[in-house]
Structure formats: C-alpha cells, structure tokens
Length: 180
Image (cartoon, rainbow, N blue to C red; front, side, top):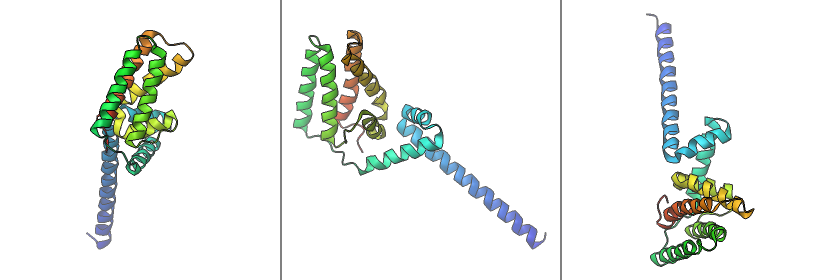
C-alpha cells in the first residue's frame, strides 16, 4: 500500500471518528436537556420551531439561572408563607376569584424572596423552567384560569383546580426543591 493511500485512509478514519464523537456529544447534550426540562423541552421545540433553536434557548435559560442568586428560605419565613397560604385557602370558600388572585400574588412574592426575578409571566416561566420544569404545567394552568376569572369566565371548579395548581408550585418553591 502506498503512503498516499495509507494517509487517505487515516484521514478518512479520523474524519469519521470526529463526526461520530460530535454526533454522540450532541446526542448526550440533547438527552441532558430533555431530562432536565422534561415536557418543557418539547414545548420549547414547538415554540422555537426546531430542536437546535430550542436547545439554544434552553441553554440560555440555564446560563441566566446560573447567574441568579437563588436562596433557601429561613424556617421562620417558610412558616410565615405556609400560614399565609392557609389563609388564602380558607378564604376560597367565600371569595374564590379573590383567593386565586391572592395565590398568584403569593407565589410571585415567594419567587422574589427566593431570588427569582418576577417580570412578566413568560419571563417567570423561563426562569422557573430550569429548576422547576416539572411544575410549570401547573403554573400555566393556574395562570390561565386566573386570567379568565378576571373577566368572570371561570367556574368555581376551575378556580378550585387553579388553587391546586398554584399549590404545587408554591410547595416546591417554599420547600426549596428544584433550586440550584
């Protein structure tokens, strides 16, 4: 075998190995994002119009989240929030719409105290998605009912469901699950 042929074979083999390594790296990165973001991964793929754009967006969310100063709550603050939540739930019987609004406000205050920026709803979703992807569907459902209740278009059963959804995110934020 001539030296030129041998060099060509080695170059082709090296190119194939590099391509294989890059493909495996991209696949492992995709799987890591899918595992971390769960259903939010697929939602982002749909919203962004493809996997590459979605993965760029999700990595940007991770970077932004890494720059946040997310902190655990001291026990006394945790107890105070838990008591406040109990009060919101108790008032639900007499004022369901108001209680849902209060639950939304309480979740926002808790986010702020933990260190999450609380801009618009979409910004909140992006910031929460990194560490709380599993409860985002609850937050979306609760927020949707809250928005409809403002116009008097939500039933009492939907409002009750919104409280359950808010509670899922509230509990996760309150107990520090999903932080760094």
